[in-house]
Image 1 (spheres, rainbow, N blue to C red):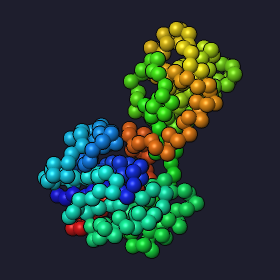
Image 2 (image 1 turned 90 degrees about the horizontal axis):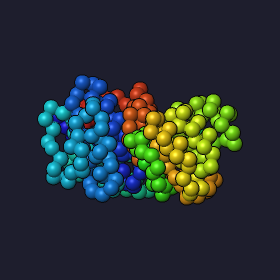
Image 3 (image 1 turned 90 degrees about the vertical axis):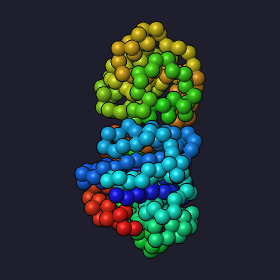
Image 4 (image 1 turned 30 degrees about the vertical axis):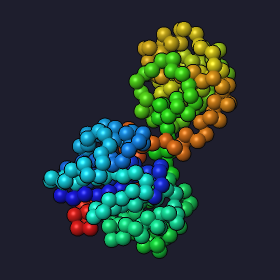
Length: 300
């Protein structure tokens, strides 16, 4: 049928988010969709693995070079490229983060007639009208604006582990589970239990010597428990973890320092998992006319 490339002038603009949400929207129209990541490096590897995890689209599960991208056969091929890269002759959607930059304008100019629209991500709620106006005035054809979203910005367990340089004491095989809230455990366990249960997708930080709080976090099905202070907890904690769904991490720093070490992870988290997909699709529903988009792809 046709090819569509999702491009951006800079990394972490939201290309993977947009490509996946568009793929599901096109697939819902009973069309066959293939998701392809073109490029190389760790980010390309992770994005390709993410694409392969969704059942609504086919994907090779590994990055391809531009000349390896298959020709469409009764399907729409959606291609995500490395930041700043584009392929000649293929219709494109430009993704911008927060608002339009000079680099975005330059990149859009290079795309020329291949640019069929722009989608802005992580737009501050109070800036939505201004961003839409700027994109329109610059001729960048805004298709949709995705407001700042706590789920889309949330890191996964593996990203929290890596940001802290933490040691894994127990692996619950939930590396890709999204963590929307980071909680500092209170002083006592009794108030902790109802407090923890208020949050569905969470990480809990607690000092190494607070066994009762560790157990409360595991009982509340926290995605991960981060034990702070650099000393291992009671063996009873790890024994209990083996019967739950909580990954247990050990951080060298004290609790407040550990929390500070996570300050940037919300800016660099990558798209992955069903929870983020649902959030992205919700932002595009009612904003993107997928039937019209399909026609534009087929006749750029």
